Image 1: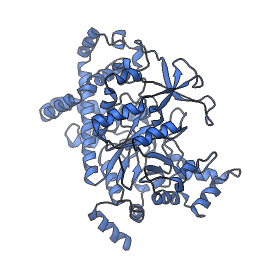
Image 2: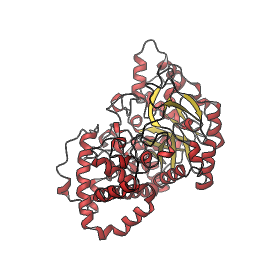
Image 3: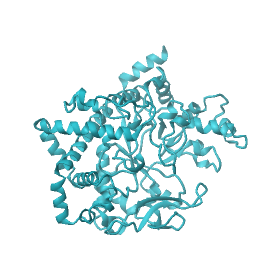
Image 4: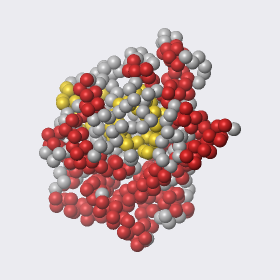
Length: 515
């Protein structure tokens, strides 16, 4: 699929301002969409929207289909008369710049339980809509709701250590547990109903502003997930849940032992038997939530690093071919020419490039990678092709300001001198100049992380790969956005012919610029 020239911002909903300790789908999300419109932005990119598990990573979710309850808006629940003001009080004190996930999860669970109790009293008001939602999503919702209810019953432990009847999904055991956990299962369905309801309202508002949402699909699922528990035959585990092989990447310059991710791998031959039905459902479900899908670790669809399930490191793995060509032909046959972006970073072979290009998926360009040790010239803008997406950095990178500040202090490095010469800029605002370079490039799509839009330092880094804890917690506040910030980015969008906001907004902004 061909993409028009456009610009957007990468910001996960959890990073939005909110008095509840974590960004959510409430009024600040709508205010952010208004900012995007005024800034001439046509795209809003988010991370995976699923319910996060261990480590609070959006790339390790309890489901590839469900939504994250922690970003449900209490204010919207109050609007729907499912919560009273007294039921959300007292709101725990929070750091406006950092998420304390433990505190947030406990608080959100408390108020969602109150909302569920009120929902049961007002069932008539929501009954038809709720039944319709459950029916439309039955395929994944039934297993997910039972999975989460059983997980709650077993004090949050991994499903492999549950009651054996549940682990093996014995038919009689499933019936008994569904009766035993009936109310908790219904609660889990309610939570998903509310998430999808609030998200769809926000998505519709975003569309009304002429803005599209880019979602994110991790190639692998989490081990501790409803997807694995309910579909063991599709993944590399035995009936008891023991991992036979796991995902990762081989040793490289950054890690002499490779990266052992631990995710189960796919039994691709089994998936081919029904023309990749599980994948087709997964894509279809995500396209209900977003307009464009970015596939994380795209190279795994051409070949993946297979590691023995009991291996201590990723060193003992091997490359195994994957049927990516067959999969994407099936997706196109059943879902049409859907808009997909390919995260094609890392060690990319000609075969991976061919798979990407055969389906015309835009690849990714990270400008930080163009300036550093082992720099790759393919990330310099003069080597771009139009069919790509350019970023200053990604969620796994330091912020651009922090990256170049460290480079400037490193007397042994020529990174800072290189970027200055390439930009022909010797001032102090390297971040903005790099953003301008991205806008000026031939790349059809430019996406800038919000941290770089705000020119923030290391304190705003989103993720440190390999570091346990403290990730995914950054938030911004409205005080960090200057009054004229939208004018600066509207001007860039207009100058470099990335379609700006709708006509009525363009007229207003143009007048502001002229004044």
